[in-house]
Amino acid sequence: MSTTQSATPRTRPSVTTAPPGRPSAVDPVRWPDVAAPPRSSRLRTAVTAAVVRRALDRLPLNVRCADGTRAGTGGPLLEIRDPRAFHGRIGSQGLVGFGESYMAGEWDAPDLVATLGVFAAHAADLIPAPLQRLRRIWELRRPDRERNTPAGARDNISRHYDLSNDLFTLFLDDTLTYSSAVFRGLPARQDLLAAAQHRKIDRLLDLAEVGEGTRLLEIGTGWGELALRAAARGAHVTSLTLSREQRDLALARIAGAGLSDRVSVELCDYREARGTYDAVVSVEMIEAVGAEFWPVYFRALDERLAPGGRIALQAITMPHDRMLASRATFTWIGKYIFPGGLLPSVEAVEETVREHTGLTVARRDGFGAHYAETLRLWRERFTARADEVDALGFDETFRRMWTFYLAYSEAGFRSGYLDVQQYLFTKRTTHEENTAR
Image: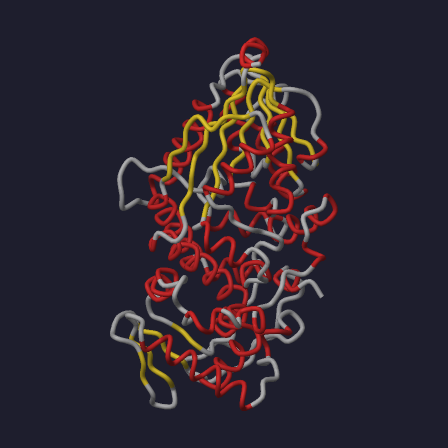
């Protein structure tokens, strides 16, 4: 079963009463792996509890368990409401179980971002070094069905971006931009988010020198805002997406702006693109490519770019050592949010470009603090509109899942574990190539 598909609204679930302080009972049809903890022997659960307790005792957390035990050195509150289920899930499912336990209401935190931020800051040393060698025994492996082959990529993208345009509209700003904004100053404000998204887009278009008459290829349409702003500059835009929902709304927005003669939106994999362009822009799309296909992705950018052209790329990155350690691991984010996804490191991006293309890294700017604020604004808006999310047919378990996803991501950027980069890649002209030879 495709677990992320269970997040798609179908019929409205019946609401049952749960114990005080816990969410309503989980729908076992929609959420089979959340509704009941996986089977775990007493021994395995006990060993997991001991390992988890040892890890928590070293962290700046205030951990309170329903059985009266405490852990941590003091800090944000982590309340474990069902210790046996919590440890059983982690023991059998690793970090996937940690996220599913939150979805089930078996643990909670008044300041979820702060609590998750502690884990993000200690990701490299959370498990003692001697036990790191046993990682392969308990970690889940990425399923082959989520490889980003042309067919697999279409399914993976659909499972996230085709959830519902109405859902994304509820928490994004009016530009419907689903990537990090660039603010003039921090902390950010909701009423300035749309302007900050335009600032980010304009920086990318400026990097790629998009203007009157530019032939621009966009890989990853989103809901069309970048294509709209590029066309308004006088560019001729070909935008590629694998999401039918996004394409339909993007086309409607483009037509509404009277720019249909300047923008073409195609349901097309980046590997199927043809032609050459003066500029290429791709915003937070590489995260869905997968390490196996990073060389193919960058070669495609290189092949589509005319000599002397420029590529502007925005990418979320993670530390290189953590990427190497986790690249084959099946994660909670992979299971429920972005199937097939993998964040690259700065080193991986630059090594791939150097070894597989004729492109040059001309510039790189990081702005992770801006993504943390972008995610905070999305999370606050999503929380404030919970009733409207419910009206779309998404149940309480979905809302906890989505809240965990947004908070988990925000914590990654606030802790510095994650970053976001804007890259400029350039390509030699034919004359320069001949001279270099």
